[in-house]
Length: 395
Image (cartoon, rainbow, N blue to C red; front, side, top):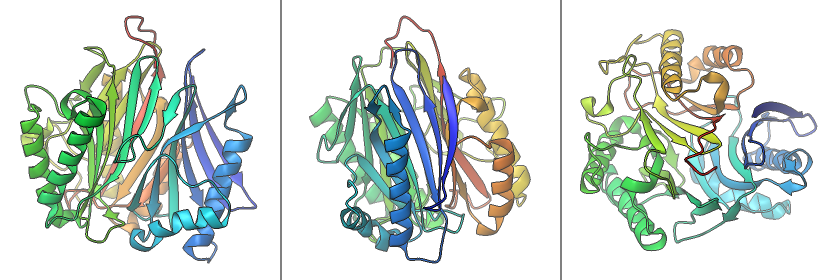
């Protein structure tokens, strides 16, 4: 069962959009998007109000049978990551708020509602959550024979995006092997690559990722990994690439399926990149779909509706819907949406379109150029539905 909520904390000037999914006797999952009204104050003031609203939401509403939801990961969307990321724990300390324990990503992708910060939080209850489980500050969620490994904010300061991508992937690969007895090929479900000046640095990422995947046995005959590769500046000014990942241990053969929607999209390898359009993970009691960054593209790999933000948005929706449908879901099953825009001037149109089409889904719209200049917009989402698949263990 999934329920969507929207709460406005008027005294704090914060809106919380959140979705809760659960099955009878099963784990509860929650995705929250927190938005703060700009009120003419500095970053610290906006962040303070946003965090206080988040704390109030968790204390007053996010409890099941007296059990609090535990954060699994957080992503801060910042307007100036180089200056703001360092202030977050300072604000928490000054306001006597709990500092972030879970794996965290700080990325410069300014929220386009005029604020300096927005926050996405993923939480669960009914699972065993372990923070800082390795040198990469991975959060491990253990339940029912599965281990879910969330790792965010991986960067390197080598010269060039090629070397940095190779380094962060090798570091992640080594940590998986040495600390978790896992591999990228067998266990990684989802990646996020944020690229400073994506128009210049994306190519180096693409080449380094392809080489790493080939070395790990990932190729067109096997599979790739659901992913978003998008513009975004890490807090470290020397970092050109930032990596976030999600991996699972304990899946049986067949629990992970790859979605292609070939009526609408082509395989990414046809234009030289190596990721899956979407991945479905099925459990005994539910399914999860992870939709990669998806834009206005056809099944020949061609950008369509060049220069038209409205028609590109509509075609993007068609593509996402086709992927969801292939996995047995539809738009009502979406738990959250992230929208990336190249041009701030398109925000008013896109914001209105999303509010009309998806009024109840937690959504954030950020400034983040897509990897091809002709793409004006891209979106990603996570969806969940109830299933009864007895040959797999429940989530």
